[in-house]
Structure formats: structure tokens, C-alpha cells
Length: 227
Image 1 (cartoon, rainbow, N blue to C red):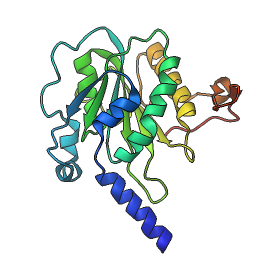
Image 2: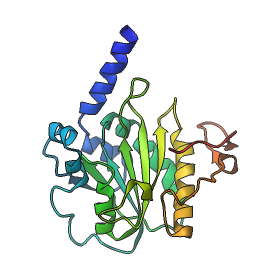
Image 3: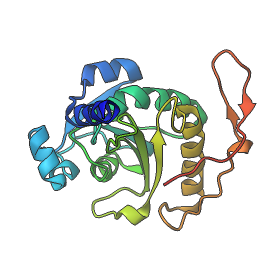
Image 4: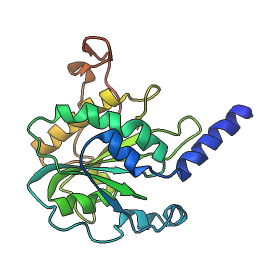
């Protein structure tokens, strides 16, 4: 009973935790734009999911360019997960994206996955990756999801995205292995010109080195799943 109460408390705290924008910017260590969804507060965000899919105001003008890729970091349902996992994922992923023209990072407060469609479109990006805190469960309150959408624009459906889920160190998919998976999906999306249910998961993690601090790169023993 005590273990259940502790897990429930951690999940509840993660849902209601505030995103420390300045702290996240410092952890990422890269220039970033901060936006807010149409949800005025956390209560409205939780009670009306549609508000989290819209921007509070128009995206800053003059940011559109010839960008291949945009990253959006959103608190989602667990700011705890964003702080714990997102900086590590970005640090592992960006070196794997040689040749990609990456737009300035965007931090979206009170955001849901679809807010990335609006931001990606405003930036003129060919593909957007939304790193977002997943709904906490009794087994994990700090799990991050990565949603990849080709040709982001208003009205995209969930079936037009690919998701890498349960990114959490040390008990889930490690940030380094998640970075390999995301890089592979991005490469396939660019090659095929789409994401979603038609982009079949043929990723083999044994083809990608796994970096462990203090050791030489090794090969992962098996493929990781994507939900």
C-alpha cells in the first residue's frame, strides 16, 4: 500500500509540475524560442486538451527559413520527464544529424503533440520532432515520448506520425538508443517523404553503436520497440 501511494504521488506531482523554462534552456545549451499554448493555466490544460494544441498567439514572425528539421520540447503531461530526459536525448541525437538544417529549438509551455504541427509549419520545416512528457503511470512518472511528423501543418492526424515512447533512463529506452531510433526514422522519413503508419519499422539497433560513459562504443544486443 505504501509503494502504491508513493507511485501515485509521484505521478500526480509529475502531471502538475511546472516546466522550468530557464533551467531547461540551460540544460539544452542551445538557442531556443519559448511559446505558450492557448491553455492559460494547468487546470485549463488538463480539462480541455484542445487548448494545448493551439498557440496562445501567432508564432514570432521572421523565423521561417529553409529548415529540414524542427525540434519542439513540450511539457505535456510530465514536466518531470522533460527535465530528466529531453536534454540527454538532444545531446545524443544532434551529432547524428549531419547534413540536416536544424531550426532554432522551440520550448512549448502547456503544449500537446499537435502544437508541433503549427510550429513546424511556421518555421518552414520539412519534419518536426516533438519531445513531450508522457502520461505518468504507477510504474513511471518521468517517461518521455518523441513524435515525428513529416510536412507538419494544421490538421495532421496521429496516424501520420511515428512515436518513440518510454524514453527514460535507466529503466526504459535509454536516451542514446532512443537517439539512434529517432535518427533512423528521420532518415527514412526524408527518403520516403512521409511518416506514420506507412513508414514501417525495420530499424535494427544492432547496426548502431551504443555509447556508454567510460567505455568504447558497443553494439546493442537487440532492437528496441516503438509504439
